[in-house]
Length: 383
Image 1 (cartoon, one colour):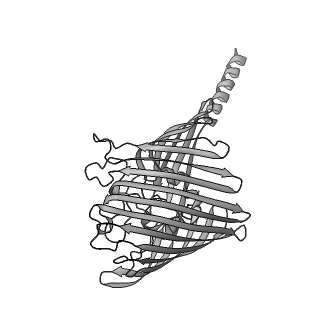
Image 2 (cartoon, rainbow, N blue to C red):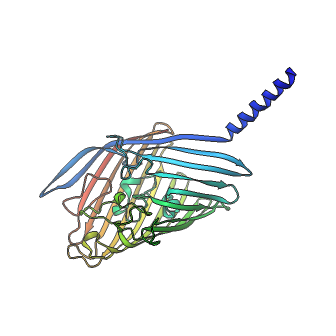
């Protein structure tokens, strides 16, 4: 009898250990802090330079929980809860949301892919962002296209989203999402997105599409988009907020030894918007980005990008109809370890067109002229 009891206890112990091993929860995060200098910051009728402490100049500071439970047969239950915050003052990011960066739960299959529900990224972010200098592994926030008009810097996330992501099919991946309006008017503040990517050796390509209907709604704040997260256009208005928003992106990059070069194109169109003084007209952006990185040593990486943005504004009595942006970005990273590095980067932007002033993303504010220079020195650590 004693031997049976011991054997049964051992089996239960092993079974319990196996069940525990089949589930996991990981705490992770990034802390990014530094000093940022911005010239020509407008201050009412005056202007001047600004030196300030900053949080998340490259990567938004964050922490999150990622979990998985093995359900057998290659099927897993998965979840992600990710918070964004300002390390300089401790405030919540993403319009003061507790898990503003990501919050979703779903099922993942090795053969069939994953279906997730919650607050998530769109397909442009999934498939094209990694090929851009706006990627979190490159320049991210400071290198974003003007006003993050294509959302590659994910100035907003998608709420109420049901999302599918395929498995890797010999280098090809695809996916899409649909975000509900949660309103009796089914099309009021809803969104959908789809895209794909292909990897063949050193070559990577990707494309995506995002459409949002009714993001300018003041009656449906429970829909797919929260306009409180919208990036400012530097003139007291918002780029986000239109009857229909369409963004299409495509990118390519090639890795050759320690060097990576890439090109990204994106087209964003906002119909029925008041951005840039437009009276329910159309604002359009075409972004052309050339980027490159070079690993000088295992610890030192250099990078640069150039972005030309061709804009068009209709029905505006305040601004010119054909604004143009030119932005040059440079960066140097030194890695103390795989988790901790220091960086220095500089951005220069020139904008032409009546009424427009330069405004680099995450800078100290809009310039008083058509030119702006921003320099940042920072420290990042990951856990």
